Image 1: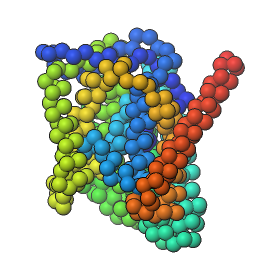
Image 2: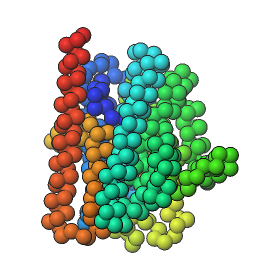
Image 3: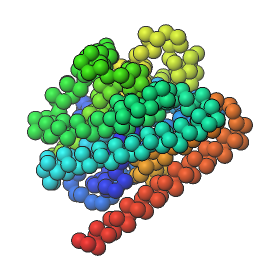
Length: 414
């Protein structure tokens, strides 16, 4: 997503969004102004991102819970929620940087973040090509050999193009997409802050639509024709970045609107909440009680594209928007009434290290156990999940402790 913008060392400044429900007023796309800046974090967003990390871990670890908890809220996965939340926070934080320190400072902040994510991707990739490859080949593990088949066949090309973010093995294809978005975002955000978001939204929507009709494949053929690129198309990651950029830039827009001068509270009419509830409930029922589980139309590949995750199909976006409307409408009231889950907040606050740690855990499990979801008894799955989540929480706490010490040192120097 992945992982999205990790604000582990950067506070979420300002107050939580304000939402009013009215019966007759149309929806307002602007967000509330944040009149005062403080060091308070959006703990609700941290908790939601922590939840997305939990769901991604359960989905990627082969166990009895993999299928039941895959797309648990309908035909929407944790990846969409994590990307949207991360883009929202990126828009919020970096638009404030632009307002306070200028566009140049905002652009540098984006680039620093992209470099940090690239280093995390490179480290995870090298872990896969060394430790996991050695274990998988030693015990002849098919899951590992399938995961990195291109690298095993062409190790020099695999390493070179992997570090260039062209070759993206399964599970390691989220962060390259995120880096791509982070590199584009300062230019898009600067343009939108000067001229408004309409042009950005229209352009992003047009690119998403073209992606549904083979934009990525066409560009790949052009690049291969002119450069002789040896990496097969299917080895360049499952996510269609030209489709997923729509989700990222919509989240960036929403986040930037939170800090826009004079922005007004979001007003959601009752009819919109009712429509969103109907769509979300139908999607939830269809996902868990339909005839085909996570494939809404069974073997009909053409209709399944409407809900396709990798292409970010149109009906998938409808399902996601419905869940987002419900989150905006009822989230603040639920946050006031439900107890805070500090362990989820910690994982969401340290999302990049936790995301990378979850990849390490998944790769180790695949290397030693394979991809069979039923290879362990139920108590074995319970012990595995308990151990993995304990390790992820430890990574989160250690990250936050290091960040706190660095912040204290900076304050002491200042």
